[in-house]
Length: 136
Picture 1 (cartoon, rainbow, N blue to C red):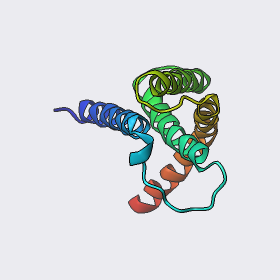
Picture 2 (cartoon, rainbow, N blue to C red; picture 1 turned 180 degrees about the vertical axis):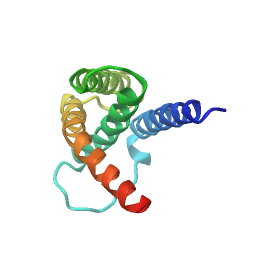
Picture 3 (cartoon, helix red, strand yellow; picture 1 turned 30 degrees about the vertical axis):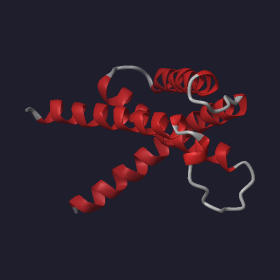
């Protein structure tokens, strides 16, 4: 397999795996979700934010690599996908997973995606600098 094709599969695979992780965690019955015994207000919102933050960074990286879209368009697509995926999960939780759907979880999902898009170019610069130092 060519190096470029291998890179494409790696990027696609990690996005699919991360989307599956989010889905599995959100589909778990509430009583099976472990309690970390942390005294953090609205911890579930922090978790939603974090899951979609990671999803946004991974998705931005893939879309930038695999398309010729401007970064602005990549961000719009990423936030749109996050909104749709998060909304779908909340609807499934409400109607099929015996959990309660929560609009504030969706807000946390979208905010995580927005911040992920904002952080993405900064992370990219850091990774580039680390790679340049390794080459020296």
